[in-house]
Length: 166
Image 1: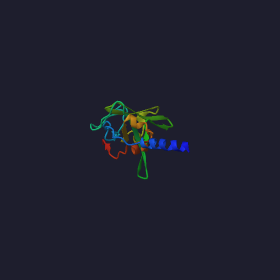
Image 2: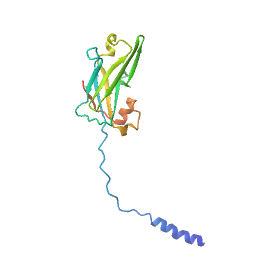
Image 3: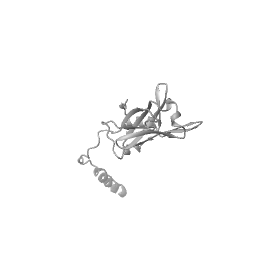
Image 4: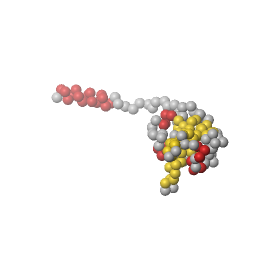
């Protein structure tokens, strides 16, 4: 009985000490939304341009040194849905291999062809009017999904506003 008498005041003290205090100060202002951007470029490779094409980022797209720039190549269409593969992308022929690659700065991206196949003898389907999509992703955000999977990138960026440069 003595233990019960001691337990009741202890419980009352415990439950009464858990009151709500005044709200704290507001936190720092955050970003209004994700700053990721996606745009498309259509390029043609030839001996005249040394099988490389420089594409400048549109003026309305801001790229920071810490951003991740991913490029994807349109490889086909399945039931009306575009099929995108991440670069670099390799193709293999009987007489050698072909590589679609890229490099970038924070102002532009360069697409290029490389490989062991004679680039001058390639069919125009591999060199002309090749469509690329470029996704510029904030580095912290990119940690949360597979950036090599185009569908995951688009789903996570929730970007329907794709800028076409052609």
